[in-house]
Amino acid sequence: MKKIFVVSPKQNKFQTIFAAHMAVALSGAFKTALVETSPKNDALQMFLAKRCHEGLKKNIDLSVPAYFKFEKNIFKNLEEEYAFLVADAQNFENIESCDVLVVMASDDQDIEALANQNGAFANMIWAAKKNRAKTGKDAFKCVVLPYQNLDIRKLEQTLPMMGYVIGPKWEKNQIFIDGFQTGVTALDKNLPAFKKEFRADDFFARRNLKKIIEFIC
Image 1 (cartoon, rainbow, N blue to C red):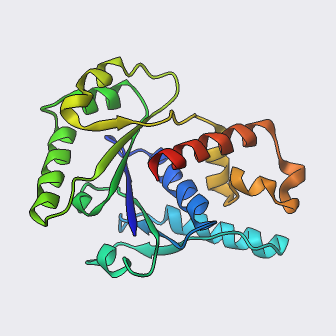
Image 2: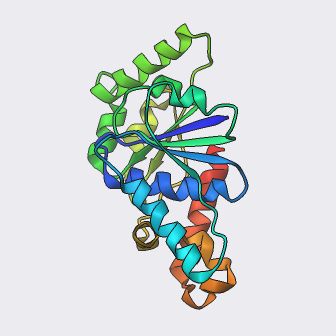
């Protein structure tokens, strides 16, 4: 199993939206688990419920990842059953359990937090890597997904020290937000039931998401 945790320095809603879209995309070809880590949040559960409802309404089989709420030992318990696990890491606990840490950088403040070698976020990354090393595992890969139009030059200067990898830019496409609201993603728009709803933005969103997933996985 490859465990992918999605975080952001400020823990904004876009990390949840990305985690949902990524899990759906992976579930089309692999057995995938989607984990909601915050006990007070049920956004991912609602997203999947809407997705199941849409599939039943249109009488089509939409790919749906298995949903889990975080509990003790959940990552270990799911290892043998699933090929991928995607977690919306709303807190930074258990980060050492991941194989890939995906960091959503949405604005200049996020870039500052990531570039600061002595900052809280960097310290959290290092602590998680140390905890992982204690178990004899290799360090996890840390992929930063900057939003489009962000100036990342300051971040690029610290890459050798911080161990980050810069991934493709995450486009601020309304399609991602709309899909999270309806349960229907841009990847579904190639199905006959959604052909009439297909727009140019769906094409660009789908291309963006596929490029990111190929880079991460």
